[in-house]
Image 1 (cartoon, rainbow, N blue to C red):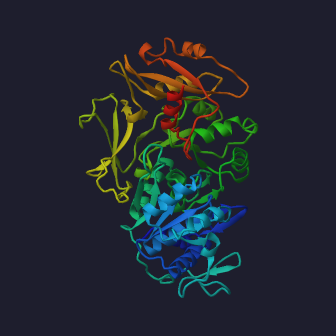
Image 2 (image 1 turned 60 degrees about the vertical axis):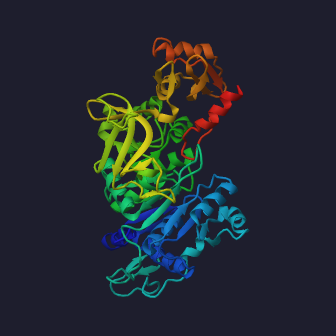
Image 3 (image 1 turned 180 degrees about the vertical axis):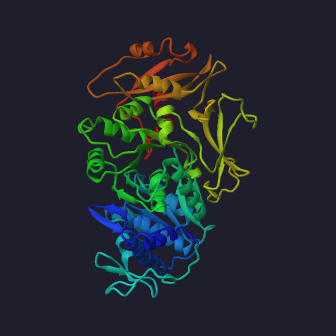
Length: 515
């Protein structure tokens, strides 16, 4: 068995079901399976074999999903590139992964050609994946008895219609490079079985069924966009409306017009939707839940959507975990808003102290995770200390309450130790964000000769408003211990972020050093 079987099986079970909706067109499961089979033949003609790495450079597109499933059949690996990176960063990743082929969409042809100019990688336009089928793969043309009609195509989905290929559960299928906010990006290797187990956890997290329809707007080059809802709902036999990229107005329009039940967001996209002029009058009644991922979500954003009757659940995880590891289900979203959730159905979680022992109940420790949906390991880095004895050491700090909910308080590397006392930036950031004129806030540590470190706040105000440091610090007085109060407040027009909206704190530290 391999990952592509989920599309083949749904083409048999539900030939009239829409798998993808993109740019105004429906792609039914049989048509999607046809495209996968054709793409398999094209890739084999290009010399792609089991174990090879094939990169994708482009916006969200069904061609990328077709490529993933076709590579799964062959036993090769998809390497999705963050299109926001610079050419030199793309070149470094392609070189590290030793990719044999780069598939690109039309809008990224110039960047792709620049990468191929020095002989680094061969190119293949995404449209070429719809080439001629190999013998025995699919039948296109006049319908034969037993065929299923989809539009003007006929697809044979009888037993034995598709030849057996090398891909199986144990085959590595996805190579995703971490965002590289500090240090060199690392390649994370996921197997086909790992992605399937992630789908199982995601199904429980969101109560997914074949009746579900999700709206995907986050980039598919990240596991947040690909693996929280998109692959899991295809695994369940449901439907995905896919946007090339996130636009708040279009998101609101399709929530009203296409009536999805679910969508994955990050704090930056939640805020963009909330601040859109159409939000107040938009009909959001189809949404069973929004799922937030990537980072701690400010309570103000959660409360704004709860006020509109839309629960905000959460998925905690990392590129290394698939990512669905800890999650806040719909019923719990209203009971414990802001929590990361509880350990997933097939996930083991520990909170670990610096000495390697589990912390006492209620105390803060580093999140360690072990599960079948974890990565196989880091690409060419088998001794990385972040992944040992089957446990992924996340670097995130959390405590667990008596009801079993995990509450993330920050990154271990972001922990500020001032005069021997621990300061968790997320605690201060959430208080700053409660100010009506504050749009974004981040807290980092600055070296201090007396205290070792002190907290510094970097704040973004709403356009057209002004704040001073004193009024902000007055907001915090009496609400947190005095040693936690920021010693400096810097005001900026925006915070530097990764593609998934995580604040790049290494760059903030440079700002603080520069004054």
